[in-house]
Structures are given as structure tokens and as C-alpha cells.
Length: 133
Image (cartoon, rainbow, N blue to C red; front, side, top):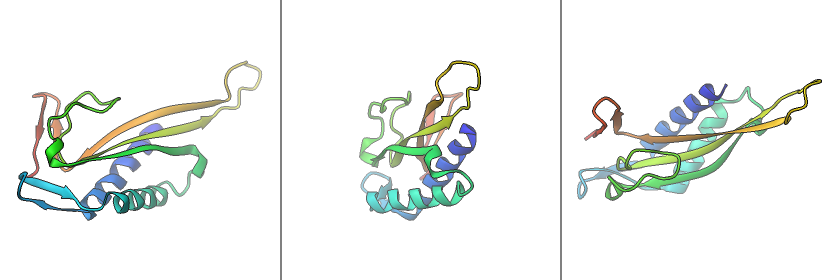
């Protein structure tokens, strides 16, 4: 289930990123032109993709937007690689309610999901970002 949400997050963020960017000739990449519009589109797209899920099953914790000038900067918490340039870093919580029955255990679990979405791709074998230029 968390994998389905992770896929939905990536798809919605990629769509929103593509719709809210323009070329950034100064920094040789792209520039995000409307961060709040991007977040609104991301939320709407994600809700559409996850329409069969109860709205309470996931919550947006943070939505951080980075530009080309941030490329190579220190990563945000939960991410191990440098910032790839124009991108969005999303932290969401997957909220899971468990009917414990006779076994005493917590009934509600929250699993944090950290997702970095960029037009650039990360090649784990080489440890480098492939820049989409």
C-alpha cells in the first residue's frame, strides 16, 4: 500500500513539476515559476489518483521546492543525495489503522514517505545525477 502511495506521489509531482516550470538559461536548466500552484496541482492530482483511498489514509507533511541554484546543496532530512537542481521534496505520512483484535498493540501507525522528484534522474551505480537538459 505504501508503494502505491509512493508511486502516486511521484506521478502527481512529476505532472505538477512539468506544468509549472520554464527554461532557466542562466543556470542551464529549468525554473519553477509557481510553487503554490504546483503544490495545489500536486494535491489535486494525488487525490484523483488515490480516489479509492480514504482521504485520512495519507497526509502531506511538507512540500519543499528547490531551484537550479540549489543544485549540489546539502540534502533535506530523509534524503541522502545532494539536491539535483529544480525539484520538489515531498514528505507525506501514510496513516494505517489496524484492528488489533486480541493482541495488544497500537491501533494507528504512521509511515513517513520521503520523495524527491526532479526532471533529473539519479543513477545509483555511479552516484551521480543525470541532468535533463
